[in-house]
Length: 354
Image (cartoon, rainbow, N blue to C red; front, top):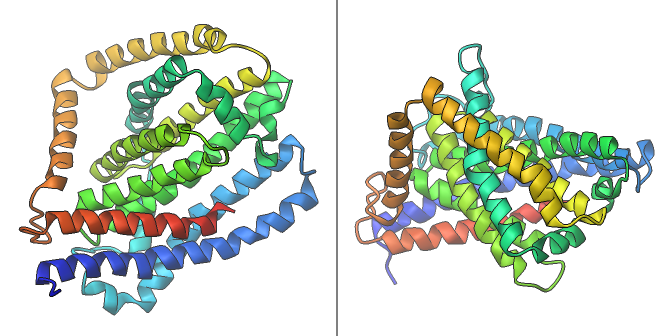
């Protein structure tokens, strides 16, 4: 079978991204992540709340610092090879990655507001209706998350639990968003079609949740895969459009804190109806109030509609001709290769799942 030039370009760009960026970054992070496995047990007892806090905080710091460092080093080593396939790269990859975390006096308020808006519009309804319609998922998720690093979920002291949940889930959000959106989506978009980078990073994110829930034989992992995959697409589009990563970290952290509160309540013997009444209903009330205030004082409705419309328009381009890669007649091949690379990145991701 003879490949067309367009197909060769598609394959080359994605394999270059996988080999020269993803594989090296993941191997590098894996080596460094071995360190806390030896250090944390020396500081805290394995079944203590402090153990989980230290584990997740150190992990987040390593990934936050490690990714731009290895991007800088690999760019020096493989700069010539990468220049052949990267569409446009005006600044170094490490600098481009770190710019996503930039917060200024002019935009910090908007970044925070965006974070809350994403939480109220995307995360909160999706989790609430999942728990409401399929309450068994709470018990299933609680059983899966019962690990030494999540021992805080059994903490009877509410203040200690909440403090642990906030610290741990902020750390988890920094880790997951840095890898999925800051690295895979952003860096991938510098190699090839933006929506391909969005799909690849979202597939990695979704499969990660799918595999995480496979510790017990059940259909629930499929549900979490689709939830994570859809959320991954939305978050990636936000990051690529706004060039901000703080909003998605805030939204992700808020959602995780609320979700862990639901699981903690389950272990304390409370039904979801209690959690819905005292946690979700007040959040929905504040969410509606927050959205109304934003529409009146911050973003006019027309700009919100335009933003949503632009997001849908960009998503639809994924199934059409890609003008950047000139894939006329090769759309299915591009989709196939995106899925292939997403699965390969997911398998490589087991290295950093320690």
